[in-house]
Image (cartoon, rainbow, N blue to C red; front, side, top):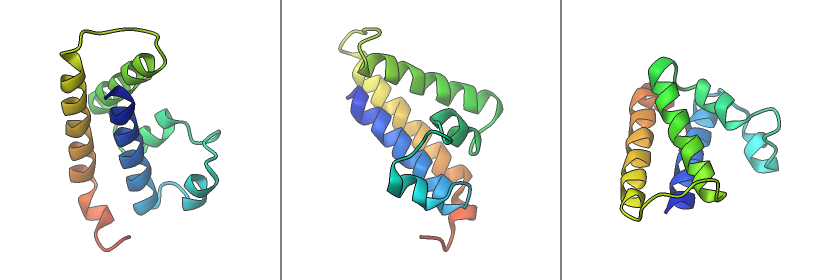
Amino acid sequence: VYSLSRTILETAVNDICVRIGHMPKHVLQEDDFREWPFSRRLGLLLSGPSYTRAYDHYKLLCRLVHGGTTVTSGVALIALAETLGYVSQLYAVHRHAMRGRA
């Protein structure tokens, strides 16, 4: 669930960044994120407390995926719901900039 949540969040951020022209599509095609770490990509889309909450959530997902921390089983569903909330927020905030772009 945590790996899926992280993938969903990363995919949404990548999709929006490319669709609104903040990141070149070749970065995704070449799978070369050295100059485009997640913090930078997310920072192109959110700022202030919204950025901090979403990035803290991402960091927690990373720690869980890589075994750096553990949580109780009931937290998995909460993490997925929070991830979907961040994704919904990202698409809602940038819906006008994405209009008409594939």
